[in-house]
Length: 179
Image (cartoon, helix red, strand yellow):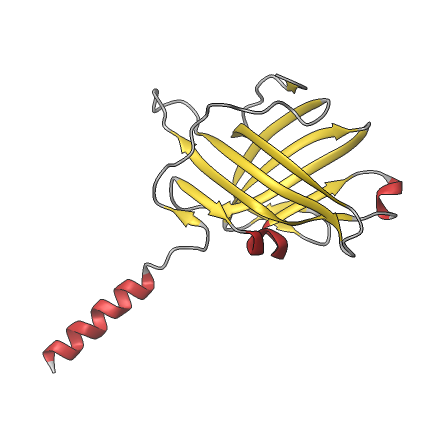
C-alpha cells in the first residue's frame, strides 16, 4: 500500500511539472549573424505576462512573453507578434503552433483587408541572452522563419529574421534597414 501511495505521489509531481508547449531548457541560438530590418525602421521589443486579443490584435495581460517586430513594408506599417512561454531560458515554436495563433502578422491599411495575410507556418526559436551585468535588462535573440500567406493559399512568401529583442520599457535606437 505504501508503494502505491509513493507511486501516485511521484506521478502527481511529474504531471504537475509539465512544461508549457514550446519551452526548452537550454540555449541553442547565438546572437550572431543577425539580419537587418525587413523594411524601413524596425522595433524589436518584448513584454512579459501578456497575451494577444485575436479579434483586435492588441496585447493584453496573460501568461505569455510577447515578442513584437514592427516595421514598414512599402510604406505600410506591419507588425509580427509572437507568443512564447514565460518559463525557461529558451523556446521553440512549431509550424502547427504558429498557424494556430501563436504567431500573428498584421498590417495597418484600408487595402490590407482586400488581401488578408496571416502566418500560415514556419518556425521560431528564441533564447535569453546571458547577461554580463545582472542589473541590466534581459535581452532575447529570436530566429523567425515564417510563411506569410492568404487564407486561400493564393499568395505566399517567406520571412526570415534573426534579431535581438529588448524589453518594451527600454527603447534602443531603431534599427534601420540593412543594419
